[in-house]
Image (cartoon, rainbow, N blue to C red; front, side, top):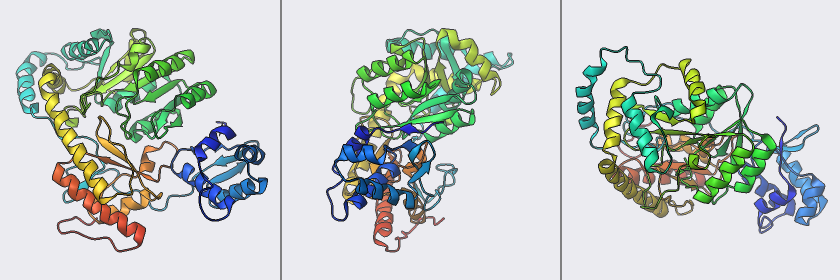
Length: 480
């Protein structure tokens, strides 16, 4: 795919006050460009403006820009391609990420685990299981395969959409084994090998992996410090004509941003103009922690062009492994055909449990939200006190803080922190194209005391990394 061009005017805005500092101008310019590339604000594979164009935009000498570009090439952040000019790249990572495939709470005993943005089960799961067990005998005389899902669960899910102002029939609901399975099925149904799928950066890495394993090419659009860059999204949609888009607009993982109703309408129109099918993950919709009124579902603005993905993994419990899709009526048969080659339906007992939980969500979810809000505030206070140089915004919902570090040391911090008793995921893991080395995601799903102690260990690890001191090993920590 041809490198995406970054106009000189856009790059000039991203650079900001780059010349405020000491040292040669070319070095200051190169350092600012390096940080923008490392943090994913300029995506790897982007074509920078020519030396002449950037010289005119910045009002500096041609030598300054040429020397800055040469410095970036020498350090691996820029490559020269025939016919493409200067294209951004990333050098090899300093240290490989550790602990990507552990089981949270099982093989992490003795460690403070900040890798999993999923809370423990809500009170009431056992009661729902007992109720489902009473209903199970009536299903035992059937083969137990329900490719679209149990009618009782599909009716509950459809009713929830109707309550939110999005008319939905049970026939539009397809129950899956979690949101990730729903995403994989949807992508397979509406794309072919080689198609482009647009997504945000940063975003949920497992979903990006699923898109790529379907043979599609991911087009990542960087988010701005304030959320979604709508002009950039619209321009990318026009330039790349993606067949599909995968987005998280409710407390976006990992940034925590909530897309406004006006922006949803504007983006839905852009997708409709390009005939791009949007797959919108609403898994975090129920986790509004400040009592704010939620915007309408994204599909409200294009009911026939949007597939909505949902799940109970964050709101009730991930161990249930139940998700779903709300599919436009014209697409249902195609999605079911795609699903048939992947699995034959979700487990019956778990579907009965989730149907019971959805009927009780008005009494169960307020306690879940209150607990998460308390943990969010405790984590924010701990990070502010022990890591004052880290920058973050307190999200109004979701499950994590997205922290910006003063230096691009995220991957290195992962290894140091694990040896000091805290598990992390580097920000680069959330970038489809690399970068974001100055960021760390910190979920607030542990209990308050564990969050505070985990941040203490994280602060010790960060200090050792940035000052060169040996990391502190605290009593009781498992040293990997």
